[in-house]
Length: 153
Image 1 (spheres, rainbow, N blue to C red):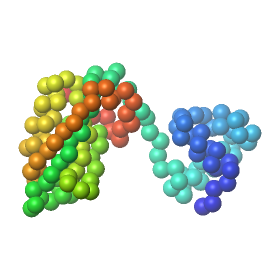
Image 2 (image 1 turned 90 degrees about the vertical axis):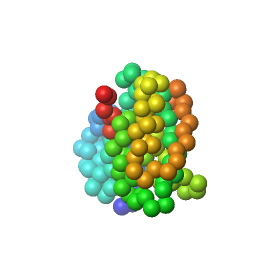
Image 3 (image 1 turned 120 degrees about the horizontal axis):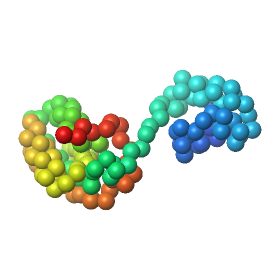
Image 4 (image 1 turned 120 degrees about the vertical axis):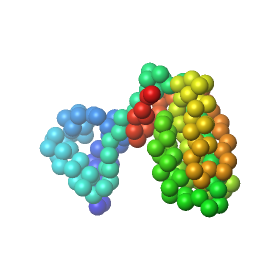
């Protein structure tokens, strides 16, 4: 699909605010609400717009910081299985494969020092993990987009 100027403007407005009403977009662009609606549907159908997301203020939910764990796997470990286990880890908000000295990077959020210690213990017990290093930022959760809301125990 070739996007024209109006398609680009619609996408740019949605990037700034995924919940902006179509009527507001239409007014700003000088087109009808039905035009925006049809173009949005086409952008979704073509896969240009894949989904909308919500950004949660994690500090208001009781979280105090985030930690990045750099993970080295055992040579015999099944990377897919270990990846899935990390994705199920409580408070994990990002799990990605890495290039270089580490195999995975797992970002988790925590509510206090005990929660941080518990996260480290859970991660080191995952089968296939050889070694982890971590670095944390106690102020990193002011605006964090996440794909799921972590369970709070």
